[in-house]
Image (cartoon, protein in one colour):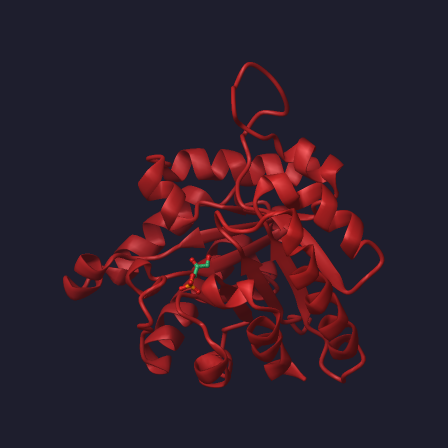
Length: 254
Ligand code: 13P
C-alpha cells in the first residue's frame, strides 16, 4: 500500500475565532490540491476553543480538523482536560499526542502518551504521536536510543490493527521553532530507523504507518525535507499559521 502524504498544521496556543479566515484560505487551497494527481491529506490542529467552529467550517472539504492533546479517560473529574470523545464530538478526526512541549510543560511520560493514543483510538481519532531528541541527546549520540525508547513506550501495542490510526511525527526538540533542521541525510537515517522499528512492532503493517517530520519546516526547505525516503509528510508549527506558507508546504506534493 502506498502511503498517502499528510501535512498537518499545529497551531499550538495561537488563534482566536477571527482566525477562521485563515482556515478558509487553507480550505480553498486544499480544494485545488485535491484535484492534483498526488493526493495529500491536510490537517489543521487549532487550540481546543476553535475546534468546533473550525470543524463546522471544514465540514465536507479536503481539510480535517484535529486536537493538540487529549485526556486518557472518556469523562470524569479532571478540571481543564478534554477527552478524545469530546474532540470527536466537536468534529475533530485527529489528535496530536506527546508533543515535546507537553512532555516539557506538563511532564508527560511515554506511558501517559500511550494511554492518550489508546484514547484516540477508542474515540475514532487518528493519533499523531510525537517523538524526538533534545540537542544534548543528539550531541551525545543518543538519538536512536531516545527515539526507540519513546516509540516503544508511547505507541499503543503490537496489534497491527492499532497501527491503522497511528501517525508518528519525528520532531527533534532542538529543531522546533529554532529555524534549524537536521540535514536531510540525518532525517532519513532516523526515519529509516523508525520504519524498521515499526515493522518489528507491527509486522508488515509497519510499512503503512506514516512518519512525519516536524521542526522548522518552511516553504523554502520543504521540498528537500519531504523528498527524503520514509518522510511521509510534515507536522508544521509556525508556518501553519499562515495559509500561503502552509499551502506552499502541502503543495510540494502537487
Ligand atoms: P515549528 O514548525 O514552528 O518549528 O514547530 C514544529 C512543531 O512543533 C509542530 O508540532
